[in-house]
Length: 479
Image 1 (cartoon, rainbow, N blue to C red):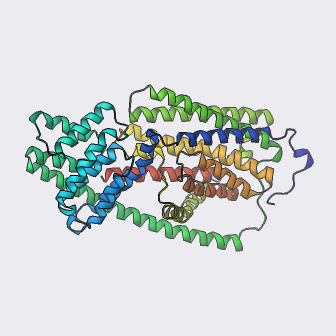
Image 2 (spheres, rainbow, N blue to C red):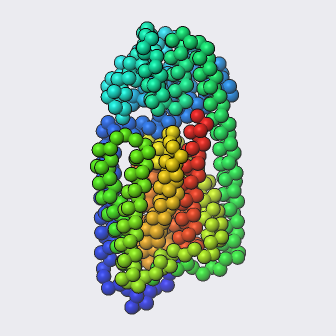
Image 3 (tube, helix red, strand yellow):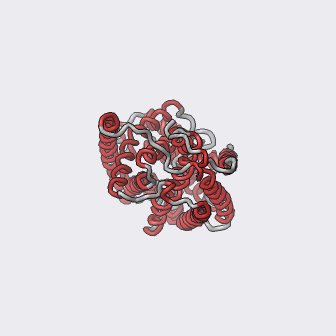
């Protein structure tokens, strides 16, 4: 036991109904998420999003002057194409495969490449996609003309160019424009696109080297921090066990705030989803709606929690919402984030090695951040991921749930692991993406127990999300 037995008068009068209601809502949300992950067309596209990004990433690594085409083995390109063209692959993946096959005819074999292109063109009409019917028609017509060896008419050039620009092909857009220019007879423009594609690939490779270097520094720093913490824990720090921040008698009252948070986010998100379906397809509009829903639902839940706390005489400091000493909180939050990186990297590698066939998608925000957006949309993304998410989630998952589980069970590890599990499973990264989030949740919970304050947890959470957004933006800028 990590806390002393509470005095008799501290036991709440009620039987903990809030905890059971919160658990029921949690199960409803989880089952709804799993239900939405059934193998439907839209889910097949979602599942393939990560695989398409991985294949695109692999192709970028193999392209450019560092690894020129002559040094790339045919099997490597075959693996990329195989990944892109597996069963139920979406239209975008098939288009990327066609572009790569055409580019690598000399390496794969002209006859073999053209036969595979012909097969993929036949699959395109039935492939799942989120493109509109008109976009699908434009993409198929462009691919059938350029890669199906048809004659390019004068009036097709500009429509095909616009189709390529709007097809969300990433760096392969440059190769597609190169192929279009060659077919139109403009070899000089085709060579310029080829040079630009190689330059973008080289910039990406330089960026990746820098990212790996930073990760190596973080990895070494994290291991050193664990060593320093172990020495401090064993020799300097007082051996007195930690006790919960929240008094026992307040556990049930604050849990009603968690119930409000679950209900508000679930039903608010469901209503917003119905509303969003009636809006035109727009990344900017989607981000604005997400921010509005987040602030509204989180704000309502926070207001209801405040009313419940006020009614029961509970202070915000009873949840751990304290800021002093702020410099120490920032230092602890930064150190905890760096110390998390070695564990997180090991977790991600193990998941990929042990369960390679099960998708581990990125957070949807990462997909939005990886696309071209106006500057004000980037600011909205930052507010969503690095301001309001740490604020609301740390208050409710660590301040409320961890505290309540800790005082009710007398075990800090029940609070840490229980809150981390709920925190991770409610993130939209099923099936296996929640495991990495669980590791972060455990570290956030341990940080809260160690410092008895939400401030370092909010800082660590914001730091993690901010660096993820920055990394996504840098990779997008690199090509």
